Image 1 (cartoon, rainbow, N blue to C red):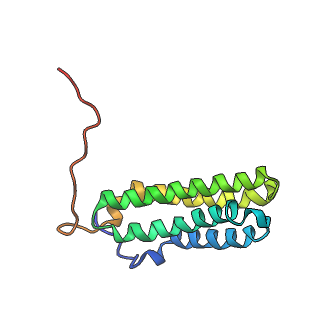
Image 2: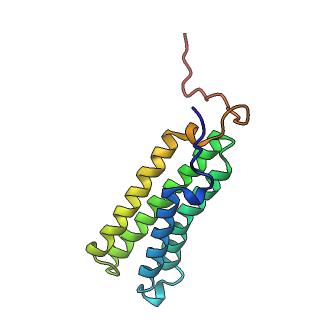
Image 3: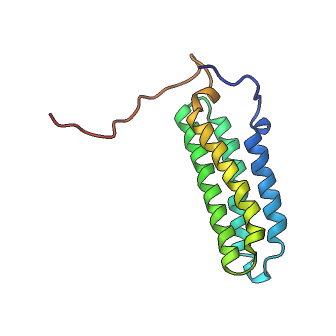
Length: 145
């Protein structure tokens, strides 16, 4: 399969744009958290939501090595899950209502689906031979005969 000719930069990826929007939305939402949460919940949720886009950007730079590309996208998925956790923690502390949290959870889920799709189709994002370096797949099981 060939690389994707229509995406000249990570900034053109819809998932990256959605991740940036999520980070902006969470930044504004987190302004209402209590001051005593400034160096804990507020800092954590802002960091994890911003990291989703950062990991996508880093993955773009790793496209020459498909396994590294996938690894960085997997890190983005992890940050997306962490962001969900902090949203639920804010709800648990009664800083946010379920109605306030749900749209953010929906955004996170959409980003997660897009990232997982990219992971499944990683070869389409990575450069074509001879520039692509492929490593052999590891063996997961040892079979004794």
